[in-house]
Image 1 (cartoon, helix red, strand yellow):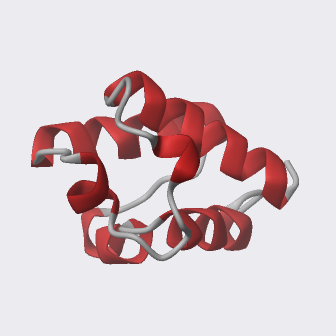
Image 2 (cartoon, one colour):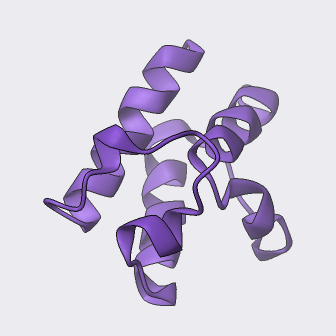
Length: 82
């Protein structure tokens, strides 16, 4: 999956979790939970769906690395195929 595809996939997951919250208009550095008003359960669901879509395991210690859209893309790009 290319970086653009990773972004599209992540935004799609966010749109499913927070319909109408504007995930498609997020800047790469915005904190997802704040920008989309996601609670901790929503964020956990987001991480699980990323795993389901990519096969990349994201341990809880790495959650700060995926707190932004840029962080999600960078993390998935680095860890895919391992």
